[in-house]
Image: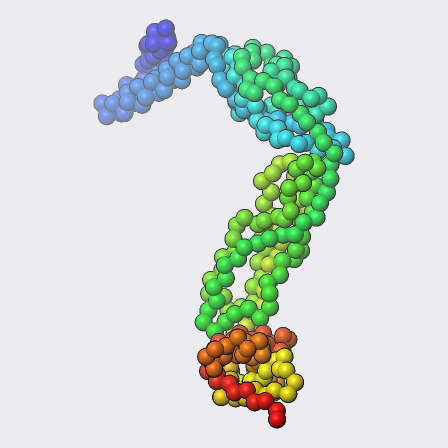
Length: 337
């Protein structure tokens, strides 16, 4: 039918164009004839397409759209215990223009939280009553259960896994800090009961570190039934360049019985350690480690050699023990006469 209209319109437009053609040279007539054919074709195509749309847009079509779910007002002292669907799939039947409008801008369907069970098919059908020439064929899901419970709040610590790789001779001079280090979560009592800490799932990975660390980390909440008091936390740590130092410390005996003395060979241990550059001058004026052997270790020994224990006695300095020599020393027990 549309093809017949197209042929008739083309012939009519061609006859009109020919009546207005003025005589001239053959070249001018050829150019004009070419433009005439293009113009006639374009007009015929537009008119035919318009008629095709008029005829076909009045037909019946079926589409499926996703309608967003709007949850009604929840009382302040209550919270949902189960997640409700974010969208509902709706199959519609109707003419083209209303369906196109619904597809591009689907309306929302409301869920009444005061009802324990909501019939979404009825809700969608009521929502579509205002739109003519559209019929609701199917809704998925049809029914939704709504369960409410007493709302509670809970403060829990935040946990973050980190992988830090420093440049050579650089390292931490203080423990990393999360600020704030805790978060308040709100939701139904049954939802909060088993949550003991808030784990930031994305591990913080940093490489080539040589400066102080300061990172902002987003709080991601994948549970729609819980609200959080924070959107992000700050991760900070102090970093310094380290240098090597060493100290020689005499070996002592702890818990030595009265009337007995122990001598060691060698009598001292040389300890090598790393110290931050800014603490180096100060640490050279103190003896940061003690070296001792518990008397119980001597009592249990059958070889005549023991390995001393190294103890840091200056916790105000950030020192990293590298090594100590010798690893084992000989000992001699002398009884008072």
